[in-house]
Length: 223
Image (cartoon, rainbow, N blue to C red; front, top):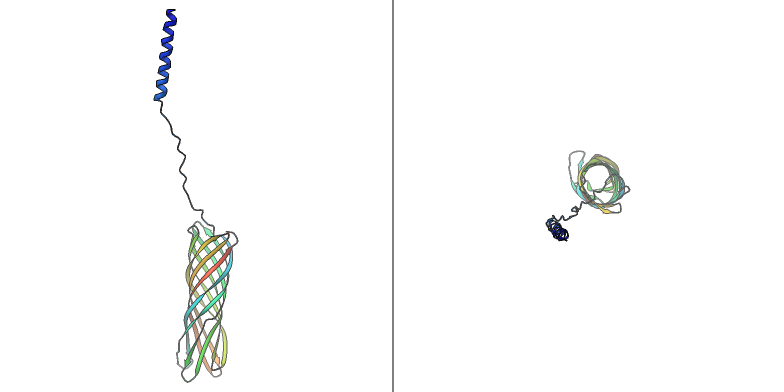
């Protein structure tokens, strides 16, 4: 009986110690890892094609063979299409693009003793390289290459035409709209080389400089 009286208090003491130890046990709180949002980088690799439209201003620089030098303003709209291909390496994007535009660019000047001289750009085309730096959905870039234009001129009713070759340089930015579509804005400076136009016995050497601002809408096949 005395043994039983000893066992009961001992068991109670052990139970109390276990409860006290459990009360003192550290409590661990599981905190989930923080979720960091990162914008998915867009891939600019591959072929694309699209349309463009814009406005141009500049100067026809004409020299009548014999010494008269009458420059005159050029301005008008242009619209057309382009195709290109880009390769992305890290954030850098390298590519080539070719475009062609129909234009309403023209200008007129009155040459003393010869009459009215006018010029009109029938079409304009460029073949350019591009280097850009991709920032997610944005692609700013610089560009440069060769430029070509078909120009028709006239002097008092007599006309002549020629194809000019020159160079172009500029820059722009593209923004990915989604579903393969990108929207862009671009500036180009175009310097078209001199060509000689003949009107009977009168010859006029003409070159053209243009500042072009235009918008582009492209579809990227691998976007």
